[in-house]
Length: 89
Image (cartoon, rainbow, N blue to C red):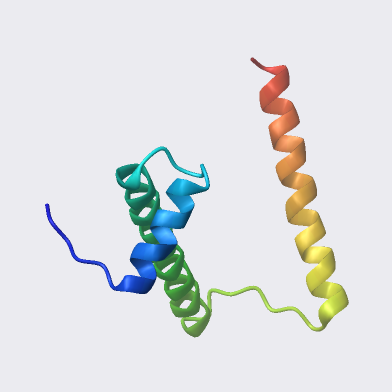
């Protein structure tokens, strides 16, 4: 595959390679594609969440404190499940 980059992007990638962040241009471009894929998945997930909320599948919260408590509960449950999984290994 051949591709032409605009001068700004080419300079950016060259600097990343020259600075030692990547071994070569191919590695830098592969990382860029991986980040684009991750971005696309994130956008898709956000759009799915918006659809779910519009369809009434969201969880209503009254204020910032209730949201904070809800998020703390999710984190606590996740940590508990990870600890249980680690014990069962």
